[in-house]
Amino acid sequence: MPKRIRITHNGQTNTIHGWAKLLGIPASTVRERYMAGCPIDRPRRSMLLECRGEINTVRRWAEITGVDPNRIRARLRQGWTPEQALCTPGKYPTHRLRPRNPETLCWKCRNAVPNSQTGAGCEWSKGFRPVPGWTAELHECDGIESYRVLFCPKFERG
Ligand code: SF4
Image (cartoon, rainbow, N blue to C red; front, side):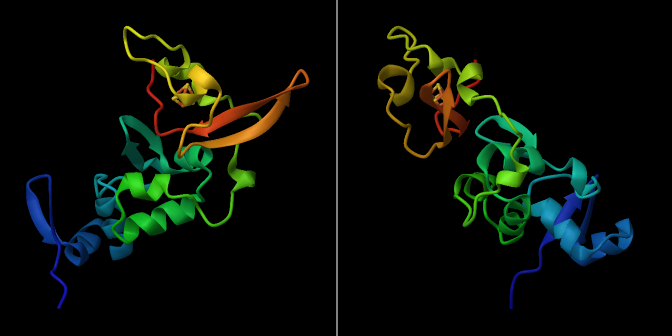
């Protein structure tokens, strides 16, 4: 028999079903918030997910990674970690969820400018080679082909 999860919140401990009754929400919602590491009494639309030092809503993560938000939530419900849920490519791309012209992540990344003293740099900024594991779109800018990086495992805000 699976172990019954007991959640402590605001100094009170209860089962998932107990919390669902107390909060007046479905048990599946309590479980989903708990698995995502969010406060169980916070509405789902403001659910925040942290991955590699960056915090965003599930919908924003979906835009960044190209993984459908429902798929991300389903993965979290199944017990995937936020990193697994966000970094495992989806079966189908979610073009409709992406902003029309999303800005490349590189603009905000400290690795965009290689620096041998600080160790900054990546395959892309040093040699125009794709970074393993990134999600990038090929696009044309002023007749030159380039990549718009939407998700990158080596991204560091800087
Ligand atoms: S590490 Fe990724 S996001 Fe950062 S500059 Fe390189 S390719 Fe762009």
